[in-house]
Image (cartoon, rainbow, N blue to C red; front, side, top):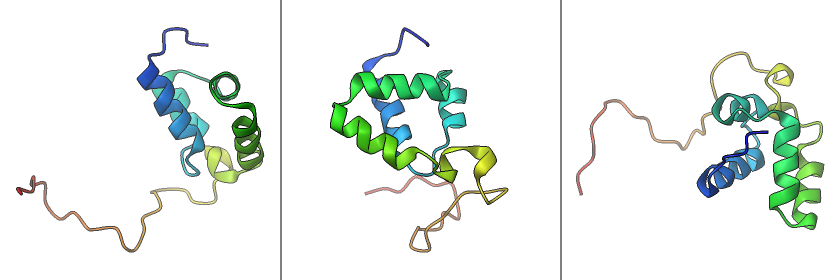
Length: 92
């Protein structure tokens, strides 16, 4: 397991682990942590009851593993999500 994780990195890993559509492979690519490393980090950083709830939620979830996903390409996009048609910074 990577030892030199900042508090910010740990917070981001926990956030990514809780997200339904973020696979463990994305955490591996970004932080070089395997699934078991993420589980160990979650166990260490969270309250026991929160960790149990997370494990129950994640176990068997197809979206947490790239190979188990049913879609090949692209990402889910909500129909209410705004379309970005140009690369322009909005001014207030």
